[in-house]
Length: 96
Figure 1 (cartoon, rainbow, N blue to C red):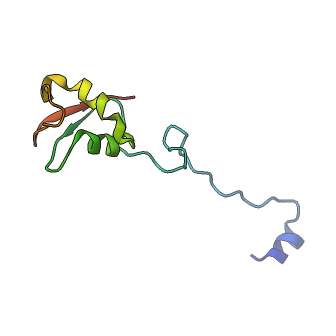
Figure 2 (cartoon, one colour):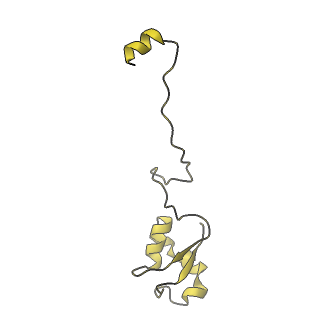
Figure 3 (cartoon, rainbow, N blue to C red):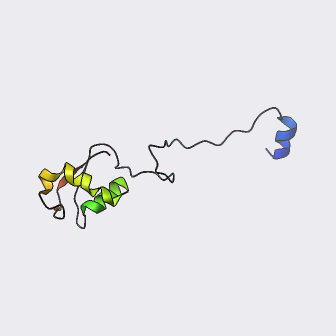
């Protein structure tokens, strides 16, 4: 069906509007990008080689500066030095 057909045969009908994305503002960041899938409440994360609390915070929350929240939620597991996380530790990632 072409534009001319629409104008001549079905002038009283409106064209179909394009579908709108189902994402809500809670699913996207300021720029409309999807938030990481692991950014749900109360997730756990197993430390892998090369990890740091700031890297985990960057991947989970999108902000490396939020490593303090991860540390506070896991002080009993991590200990007194937040720089010494170990491979295989299971950390709780609090919702913010």
